[in-house]
Length: 197
Image 1: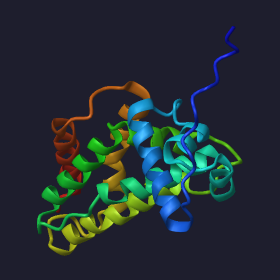
Image 2: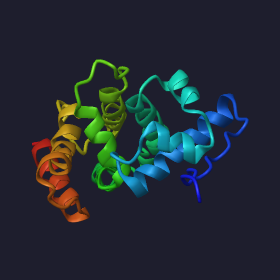
Image 3: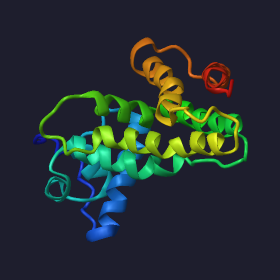
């Protein structure tokens, strides 16, 4: 007579500490978000796949949301470079096309959803991720003003938000496609209002 089957053996925790452990865990989070989505990316699954103890994750990040935000912010940081082609339209097209492509990914959607959730347990890193990147993009508009491509009184933040806003709305609310044609249309529409008269 056979007894109950024993569960599959767990992956033995690796002897990782500090930055090595952090990199292993954050890389695992990003991979799981791509394959399992936000719902399937639990602390238990991350710990098992990364070969670390759950307690190590909780000790460092405190909550699942903080863990995911750190992973996404770290992974996606290089996804939005600020171009400098010498032409404001081209720079805006490149930056905002990258933004549209980023928020169309599983990781980008997860970061957006976490950014709009209201939860007191989250550290104050949700809104700043997007606001920091949009703030950095203002330099594109300032350069256009300096070169005389845009009116001197052009509000850089308003130009960036005028194009980025509809991309966020589509990603969060309507689910309509985020393609390069949409970005080009939004950039041209916005720039038309900012050209020198």
